[in-house]
View (cartoon, one colour):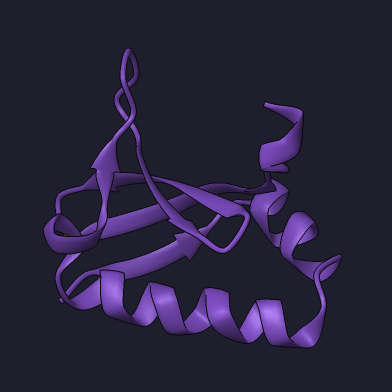
Length: 80
């Protein structure tokens, strides 16, 4: 099982989300904490990983037995 740390940037972003979205983030991170290889995808051209849910993306970095949450972004698919 991995330890989870959250960057100040991600912490501030998550504070702006509604309570139900924050609960989803926690639920997803609990699953990732147990088995990150199952849920995470490598970001092309970068050393970090991502996981997507609804219209949100969580970007993470894994080192040894720690997962650092870099940022949590909302992405509107209609804007892509």
